[in-house]
Image (cartoon, rainbow, N blue to C red; front, side, top):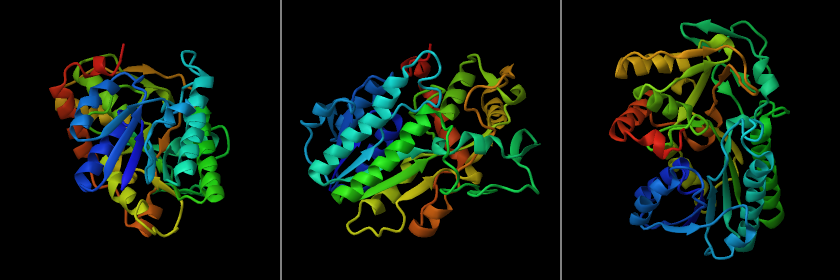
Length: 356
């Protein structure tokens, strides 16, 4: 089997490429990356040593696909991942849409041409911010939890957000570009008869993730804490009680193997792949973990809210568990330990990641 991974030199793309090679010697991996993200060059040599054929190209440029060999499957791990992209005053809204949506169109045209299957790694940020913000939470210890005895909207339970939760705007330009990509992917697959799977991923985390807040808050927080860099709790009173779950990208491989297998049943084309409630924690709880590992560090408070901030977002992966037998394999503490060890062994990781 031949697989093309876009964004292969990013954290998720490189992690999946390595895991694919480890899982099956018969898989031939090709990778496409434009190397514009700080730190992406760091992964090039290691991937090449694994026998992965890398192509320097940009998914926004249709002609960059002309030199690529035909493959059986494309895993799209290329994206601008920041929910504030295009609205923060420092990044371009047009470039965000070009990267996350036009790039998807170019990949789908490539799949159409070669009859390759397509797997989109989408995001939890396709879910409605207004609906998420309307959910009542209460403080338990140093974290927000769903308030008991409330009428929860469709698609949410104490296990997290399900696939049928509202995706009505606003969901951010980032979220809307990914949601539009999901719809286009489904339409292309139906119109041109190639298989499509949509995997909505929660926060990805693990060793080797670039230490930027927009690329992985768990990794950024641990690296910054270790180096006593300035950190702030933003919004929600400046207490750091907002909660997210995380999953290691290598834990996706068992599901991707099933999705790319010949004759995979069309059970469901869209899945949540998050860490779930068992792999969730607040920023304040993450700070407690860092203090135990590295010693105390002062965290500032910025009580004012930012656009698109939400108090609680946990992904319910029960559909993937029910139909595919999938669930995260790496516990939260193991993920944090892995990140911390990498941070200790790579004292210049924030600089490699492009943190100013």
